[in-house]
Image 1 (cartoon, rainbow, N blue to C red):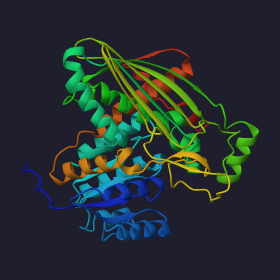
Image 2: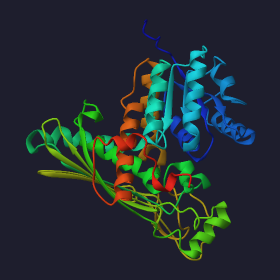
Image 3: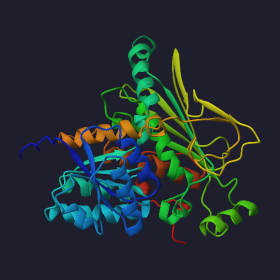
Image 4: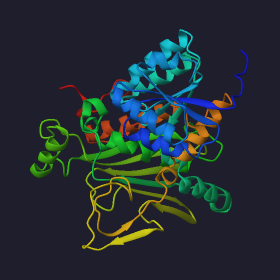
Length: 411
């Protein structure tokens, strides 16, 4: 089989037009050799709006398509970015597989986190991409955060050779709750905050603990232990707020809004390593807070997204409408507030899309693939099962292959 040709420009088709699509478009301004040439979603208004936005940013010419088949078969796109709700991704990947087998001239597919709702779905996503002969990338932006990339490079270059490898990675992500109704619905999302946000935390922590140049799978999964809780959103005041804003009856079908997990791993030299992760939809501060730490025998590294260099103070005499112009999930318009001056870059979307585009353009697999997305789902399912059983789960666990988190089950 001949090597795929190197493309001058990778033409991307967006599948999905929700909140995350805006982040990707903003980040793609900083990516060379990339065009957004297609947009598909079930909503005509949304796909037209996102296509117009891509064109306004100079990323096009982007065309809205009425079907995934029309976009994939158009000859105008080389790669597809899946950014739809979690419960739609497996069917979309099945359709991409069918279209590629039928001759669609696409070479690659990238999928937003998490890859699926269950380990079984994640394995099918990987198998479908491989069987179709597609390059595939798992879009986990925190791995490509500027602080993460720079911090890991320094630690492994300067500290590890004389101090020894790192043994503990901590990752926390918290905000006051998701934007879209489907995130709050366990069956559609695949769970609650553990599924939504701990997929970031366990993978960025595993990345920091992994020796540069080696795959994430070089660290062996040993065990998972977790606690979940619903702390805020079942309280009558906040349940009523959810029902009013999103039509969600959270008192009938709640999911966890807090999760804490410990993942034990083993290095290739037999050393014990730990991931400590905490996530929450019950945090009220300036906005989205990401905190990362990496600890080794003689060193440490830390990062907090809200410890911004830029801060703004607005007195009580200045009033403004609600928005998110300073930080994602912004909770106030007055007082002393941090400003995330380049969210797309600081959160990792720019370098993520730059890496994926260059790999796909050159016909190569990226550093983060669907296989890594499968590994993330195995960790998440281990954590959910541990929380349900109230005991530590050891890997490999055959029950995880068909396991569905308690809050995601139909009944």
